[in-house]
Image (cartoon, rainbow, N blue to C red):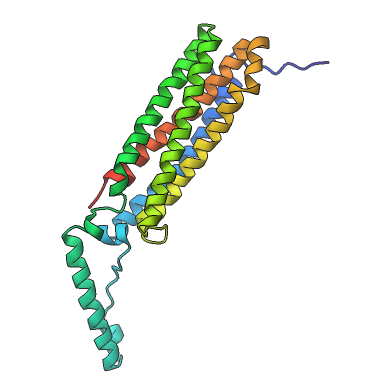
Length: 248
């Protein structure tokens, strides 16, 4: 005895959505809250620090003079030396930051721009793949869906070289608040990209057999997967200007 699950291909009367669409929208709502927490952390840390402290991790805490009134003379001399170096370091920063950079992510802007174009193009191919199924053109669907997966791999390869460049120049998550958020947020995004590759790869491979037995349901699955992929692209659209283009 088989039990038919309702609202798989037909929308629910109470929400106007199928079960799959309703589920993915709820999931994406939780994802918005996840990434929203990190964007809020960015705003909080940026507002509480100077740009040099935030981007390059320089100490920005001023010590009250009365807290050291009972310190030894040699300790005062040491602090004076540190202040002197700090002022010199700050002057160097004013003339171009670390090695002439206004932000440690400045060298990665070309690669990030390229990856932005790649993800936008992948969103287009997702729509074309879904539209091909509506037109009953399964061969065209496989082409566009395969291109989408290829774009995702291109994104990951570029991101790999971007990370390698950061490590080669001595930029690590512990270097500064900006770099800590950069590695955390972009790596979290990378995990979502990898998840999209796994799901999309399944729908291109074994999962595509459903097209022969239940094409309407398979089309719904592609639409749901497409919604997730559009969210992945949208997150990057916010990450790109906030992490790479804002400075000072």
